[in-house]
Image (cartoon, rainbow, N blue to C red; front, side, top):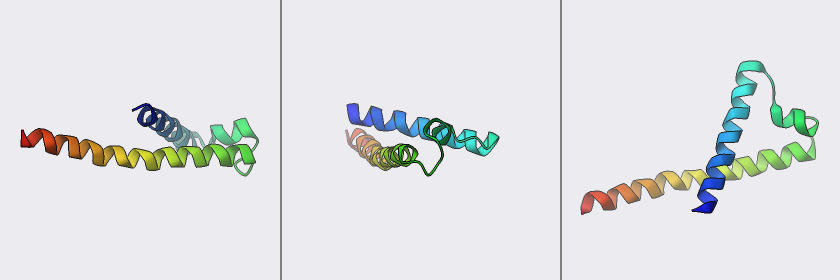
Length: 72
């Protein structure tokens, strides 16, 4: 449960960063850590990517929860 919330929060932060990139051509993570190739940026990008992968499991768990709800 806690991991789900952390992953969802990180995914939202990542999507907001991509929104900044798409609209304003401004990468906040790269700006904070000194460029998109900096080790700090790469670590953050990797953590956010892992959070996004974790969130994929939320989709299937939610579907299974609805399926069991419908069976009752």
